[in-house]
Length: 109
Ligand code: 2BA
Image 1 (cartoon, rainbow, N blue to C red):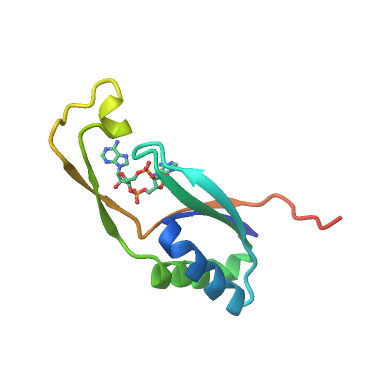
Image 2: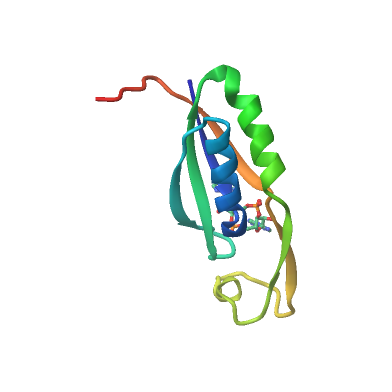
């Protein structure tokens, strides 16, 4: 079994959750914050059998798209020590970041 820690943009989270549910995959949603932009994003915890990892990744790919965020002067990023840009910067975000972890055991108690 694998655990997919899947970080997506808030705008894609609802659609992705629905698509997973439709295909019979459970997920748990966490409200998270990206360390770089310091903006809200969503992390879905998805436990799946090994054989379903590729299918779930396809569902994620189909429901999450890349967007560009403009980081303007005065944003939290520019307050970070060592930040060099005083001009607006474009940063691509997404579609999704997926960490695939081995699950040692799964219990429903
Ligand atoms: P953030 O940390 O807010 O990052 C947003 C986007 O900023 C990233 O999009 C990436 O395009 C850019 N970015 C991040 N760090 C950067 C840096 N040091 N220099 C230049 N650009 C940088 P994504 O790569 O799609 O990541 C989306 C979100 O996924 C991230 O939000 C973070 O919450 C998570 N994430 C990405 N890589 C991670 C990692 N290695 N470990 C944990 N979480 C990660």
